[in-house]
Length: 242
Length: 242
Image 1: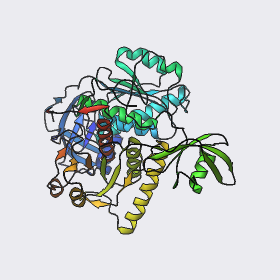
Image 2 (image 1 turned 30 degrees about the vertical axis):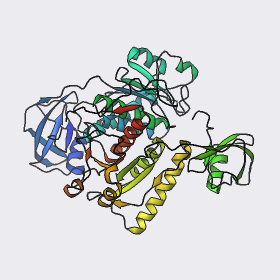
Image 3 (image 1 turned 135 degrees about the vertical axis):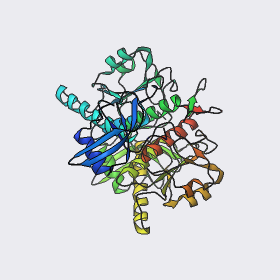
Image 4 (image 1 turned 45 degrees about the vertical axis):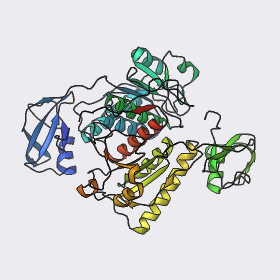
């Protein structure tokens, strides 16, 4: 990882290395790159190559390859975190943090007690914005894989799709987080409603404190990514105090 | 924890139960409490009692005791997280999340590569604001202990004060987080400078991804609190890939 250059972009084709206007602006105006400097270009699907800036100007930044295409192995298992929509810009904060931390799939949930209700048009706009936030965060974090941002879904639909990969998060939950359940779904501030709790998924606890919805989603991502990256290990066989 | 009422305030004296105007406003206007409803009142030092609202009006909320004073045992070991000052409202976000997660001491750091430089007056104002944010987050999280927010300090001074309790966080750090080093200090976006890295503290890694400074501070808190609450356990003896 340390060999990756600080500047990072996503391109459609690692042979052509064509930048969109937003990315060219980012490299030239925000990062102030000049000809001769290094950039990492990734296809967002696990492959990247070292590039050199050849010219900057007229709103465009041109790159040429300066290294072979490198394929990153996908870390296993893929990790998913679902979070219930809340008001304001906290959902974008969640998407940004989950992306930085390395979550593979981000699932916006319309929970029964979600304060926010989005109609179809607003949901499409919201998910589009989440994808943009995820792309920017992945550039910042120099990821080679863009996370998938799912359409807004109900807990019932998410639970069905996840099957035995999924678990709900709830304060005082019975089980510790585990890679055997690599998809954690975090409820809204008021918690899951009884019908949702009866969806068939086991309930995982994230710790003894009362967390805001967005903090719980970030904590779920830190713990899952920490388990996968072996920064910590599973609390197997430990009975936790409530 | 589940026996704690949703509404929570800090008072100077658990016998007198006098509220400040800000807290009275919070209970009456934000939480819209009415006479007869439950409130938890805490002294911020580990003790709390169940109370009843007896009247609301004229900008004041009156409480009477409805239960005995309960003393919470302090969780061991006390956890500290230091974070380097950055621009904008991200330091407040860090203080809010660290408080919710259960950190006991929050240490704002002026690192060599911190983009933000505060003079003494600005630092005093900033720390005052952090203490206010911590108090609000502790109310939201129904903590019985307010975290300590230290004055802004250099890494050298923090390292000296922490001694063998402290560790630096850096991507690719040698050691996993551990309760044997319950004080983690997170550097600025550009990382610690070589002189800081030579301060004598060991270097802990938070995982394989490149995190923004504020995300790293939150991740450090999630992992330390997860270890203390036994949501996860230490990755002892595991060599992590870089």
